[in-house]
Each structure stands twice: as structure tokens, then as C-alpha cells.
Image (cartoon, rainbow, N blue to C red; front, side, top):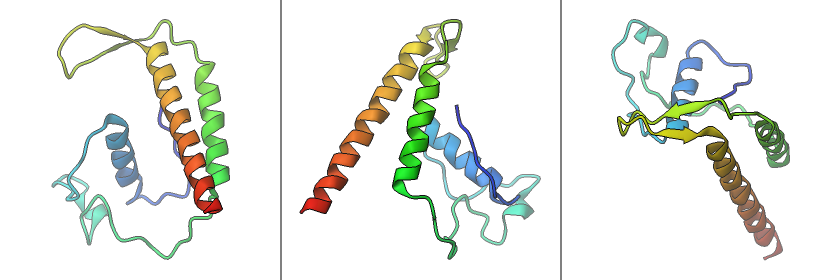
Length: 126
């Protein structure tokens, strides 16, 4: 499940969701935006990524970690027993257990958070 926030501009919404979806799918996309009916919205750079502005990111790491924990907690409570996912890359009818997939991904993210927290804590000590 991918969720967004707010404050996006019309030219950034498609860029953001295209990039976020590519990350979720494990795909790397070219920076150049291909010709399309809406290309004029992406000028003058016509790229997926563009230079950062002077806007300061005011989200603290603690705040973001708390949101992530809440999301993971909510995902754990979802009953996925009736959901079947087909892996189209392999062109098979192999069914993937959504509960197992979410639990495995959740465990991986929690492990990474713990590792990152331990690393950050260690850096502060040294």
C-alpha cells in the first residue's frame, strides 16, 4: 500500500508517484520523461528528478519512525487471507500468500530500523 501526504504541485504529483512506485517495484527508471500528452507540465527540465529547492525538510527522524511504526502496526492487523497475488514477471499462476509477504517485508523493515537506530546511536557515542 502506498500513501501520500499533501502539498504537492501539479507538476510534482506524477513525478513523485512514478518514482515511489518504481521504488516499491524495485525498478530503476531513466531520468528523462518520455514524450507524452502532458509533457509541457514537466518543463523546462523534463526530468523525473530535478534540483532540490531551498525548502527545509522539517520532518524529524523520530517523527518519521513513529509514522512508520504506526503504519506497520496497522498493516499487521489487515486480514489478507482472501487476497491472492499473481507473479506476472514469471508468467505463472503461482499464488503468493499476502500474509506471508507482508509479514516478511514488515520484519525486514523492522530489522533495518533497529540496525539504523543502533548505527545512529553508535555514531553519537563515538
